[in-house]
Length: 335
Image 1 (cartoon, one colour):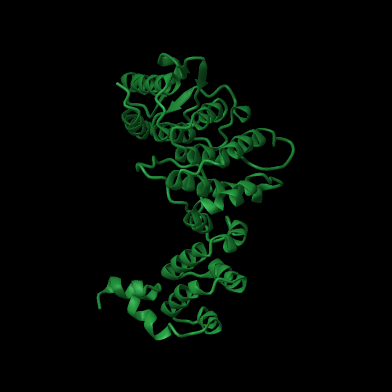
Image 2: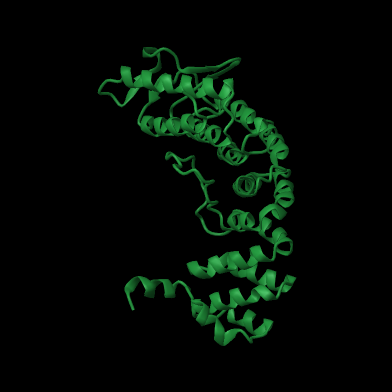
């Protein structure tokens, strides 16, 4: 046996033949098998529990989902819970942001260079995505409750699932709730002690799943008036291309931004930064919409929290922005 295969087995990978000796096990026997020290047997139990769609099975799988470390067992639990659909969704909503530590804790610095919607990093959100359209009303309900930072963190994961479902199933029912969420986040200052920066970025990303939707496009422009550091700009460019509406606002925004980046290149010296006063402007005009951008990769990028004395534009992400612009301009067929 080669080393890679042995490692996969240690992580719980099985074949169809591995299931055969256990197909006659009853529900209780399979639930007991969930706690077996052998990860393959845990994967076997999880797969075979699909035929027992009841709340007790859901509760046991959810409990196992929280602490399971073996990759293929986790994947099997996710698939089985998704197959239970509405029976499991409330439990999965409560699990958002709970499993593991792979969720985004900081604004990203890399461009997501794929045409598909990014796979949610949170395992509960990924499972809800697999549930499909049936999960949307439950996810919408989760957007409507904000009392503390934990709620914000869970909402961030819910947005990933909503965007993925919108992209995959063309289910746009959550859009009005996303608009309301964005407005509610603007009004949180002084009400609860929390940070909304990543949540605003997640909204922009989720909107990329809403193809040909003018409300989604306009919401991106609205968010950019206040949240305009590098990660928001990069994600907005990508989402504008994915939404695919080639109107005057989107065309002007992308082309003017492209010219802006080229001006930086022309004026760039050996330094790693360039003063915004040395180029034409650090604002982009899109018809009646005007954006003043802060190129520093600062997670506290809401203009209300930034000083106005920051004139230096960090250009180390220039290539990432140019890559995003090239793809978005091509997607909108802008000449």
